[in-house]
Image (cartoon, rainbow, N blue to C red; front, side, top):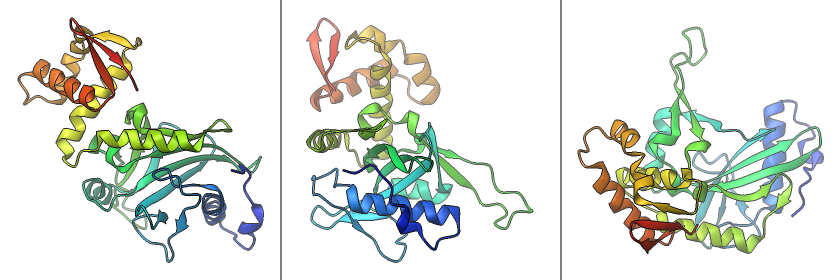
Length: 256
């Protein structure tokens, strides 16, 4: 994997955004493997396919690239809010590749993959409508809130210029698949409890430490009158799927 961007592919483009798109998409095509199966190259969709940018035909997975000159940051601008909310609950939603690059150094600094089943309305922020004077007056866009995605769903491929082992990336992506849930409501609960577990500083933690998040969860789910029971249920799901283990006497250990 060569981290350098090839300036030659952007020759003839006068728009900064078009030039950046060509640079970054060309880099992915020439350097990126499929995080799902490890195949050496992703194929590029032609004709500006609206759902995704890349795919690998054998495992049938699709990827959308979001790139930024500089640090990726905690939130990434995306398209129409209503369209995004609709997409994340459908089978057509792709995995996302988030790239941070430097035009000054012409190099890719950071790249992460977020599998599609980590997307939930909680991580989609509605932007204010465009003003009446705008060309698309009233249009409502959105931001993807990366910091609200559990760390188990933000799988590093390049971190501050350091390239992760391909097999490790594929294994982490496969492991994250154990958290896949089609039901959006169920997806929200398991990720909320996973975020609570991640927020506890020690790998070994108690049920009481997770109960400490009861008030925040009650505010988010006001119709649920038995938050503690829901916490226990979700901890059991995380245990069954290999992310934590029960070590006895109300104590758990974080594995992943």
